[in-house]
Image (cartoon, rainbow over all chains, first blue to last red; front, side, top):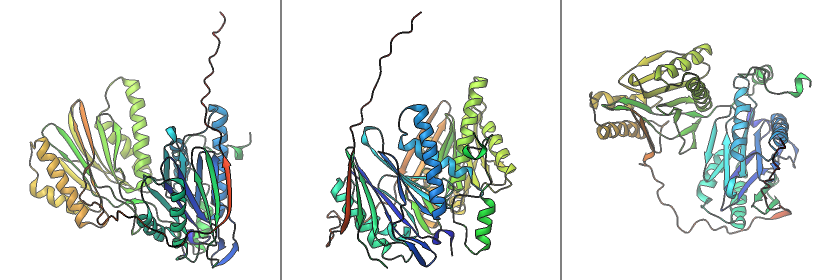
Length: 204
Length: 273
């Protein structure tokens, strides 16, 4: 069994018109046993920047705490929030530093940059950045997510349609993966508001 | 501040503190993760006025295509570019690191960077990690001594060649070069040959695919032709899009309104003399 299949996870982010959406499943398991159905995989760094981490749950939490620490230091020094591109480089550097004994997680970063232009990117566990203009996926359900997003994605969707698309892609993909699921957690971020929604999915 | 609160290693470089834990997990039967690789076909050739580099744009994670349009031709200096194959994080990190070292060197010496400087910096780094930093590179550029093309292997050995290919599609591309390369090619002939070599990698090697990127470097000038050729467009794109029969059921909605982002520029008072 691979190390990523120990806890199970699914994270996806999509780009819309001046908005982005990031979604994850809610299961935390120990191999085939489920121990929590409300695990938080997506965390807010600042109002316009979110990071979703898939993989080993202990590294997810440790890495999140390290990144919040570095971002708070940045805020104190620069007196402003970090841009998403800068944050992606920071995460990449922190992961590559542990090249020969890596953190066992794969981040998905989504944010609104200058002029409210949405930015998404994902990385493998040693920090190889992969920028995309449409969608990025990560987790045990990633193969199904690639297929679902490839079929359902359309460019320049508004927030409502983007929410529907990302939710349908997430729920249909985790239904085909034993290790992720138990509902979904979606954040849709526009320049004026953050909408957080909990989805009802199959509880098996 | 105690040692544990600072999480940056004192002199930069790699930190090995999670190795013991990861080894323990591997011994318990949990396989280590696979890294993003750039399966790749990368090529370079020297033509009459300089160097042409070419690369495909597919990044793979095992058998899955993770990125359909990634950039494999990395900037090193205004007159030097480097194509990378192997583990994606290693090629990006090593080319970024040497690129910054070259810039500092340019500031110190007030001269344009030479290709052999980049070559020596890269091979020293890769050799010192004994091949564990898995980056196979094709380095090309034009400096004061003329056009140069080199290949660098993950263990640190280098070759200097008039035409070179690396990556999983290197055999497919090399067959095109061996058949059609000649000295003194013009710019258009050179670009056509590089595109043909990359296409043969794209169509015959499963680790390479999508589009062709080309970079032409001549004395005092460079042209980065991103997505020069796109021989694999998306077929059968549905114009209607996807219509969902059932809307997703939402259990809970929380809306956080955000204040408008305002840029505050304080006009300070002039300092008193």
